[in-house]
Length: 122
Image 1 (cartoon, rainbow, N blue to C red):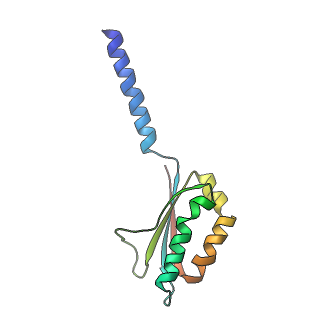
Image 2: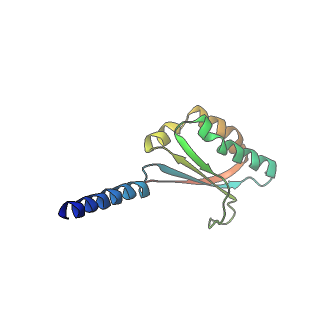
Image 3: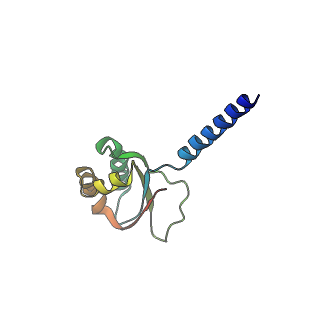
């Protein structure tokens, strides 16, 4: 009976450890809050969002991208939020000045009036 209880306890502890690892990812969430220039068209914004959505195929360090905000509590005048998930802090660091970032900036920078970014990890 002791062996069974010990095995159950060990299984529970192992499961708790796995659960903790899954709820504390080491990826980096990169949040871009953008304010578009006054004459920006919806088509230009769509082009930026499509370019952002294509990032995981262009840069292996980006695992996911979100472009459709549901609720925004952002400063007045800011129009959109883009979120990119990077595989690690190193992947985010290596993204700076990469070909993928430069390609994204080709459509993003011309219509961006200003932006704020935040990077979050565990």
